[in-house]
Image (cartoon, rainbow, N blue to C red; front, side):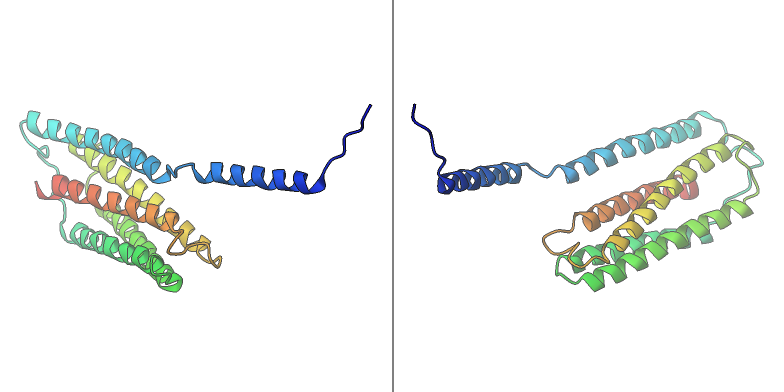
Length: 208
C-alpha cells in the first residue's frame, strides 16, 4: 500500500485560489443600503400622506375650518423656522459635496452646522407649543395640528441624531472618503425628506 504525500506548494496554491474565489464572491454582492433607505422613506411618506389626506378631509367636510373660537396661528416664528430648515438642506448638501472631494474637515463643519440648525428648528417648535392658546384636545383642528407637527418634529429629532452620529463617526480617520460616504449620503437624503414634508405641512397648516 503506497502512502500519499501532500505537496505544500499545491496546498498553498489551492488555498490562494479558494480565497480569491471567496473574495470575488463577496465583491459580487450589490449594496442595497440606498434602496432600503428609499423604501423606508416611501413608507414614511405614505404615513404623512395619510395624515395630510385626513386633514384635508376634515377641512372639506366641516362647515368652518378651523372651528370657530380657534385662535389664529402666528406666522412669524413658523416662517423663520421654515427658512431655517430649507437653508439647512443646502448646508447638508455642502457636507456631501465636501466628502466627495475628500474634504473630511469641511464635511464635518457642514454636518455640525446642519445639526445646529435642526436643533434650532426644534427649539422654535417647542417655543411655539408653549405659547399656543389651544391644547391637544381643544378641537379637531388643534388635535390635527399637534399630531402633524409633533410627528414631523419626531422625524427632525431622528434626523439631528443621525447627523450627530455621522459627525461622531467621521472623527475616525478614513471612515468617510470620496469612495466611502454612504452614512453622509443617507443622512442627506433623509434630511431632504424631512424638509419637503415640512414645506407641505407648513402650507396646509399655516397658509391655507
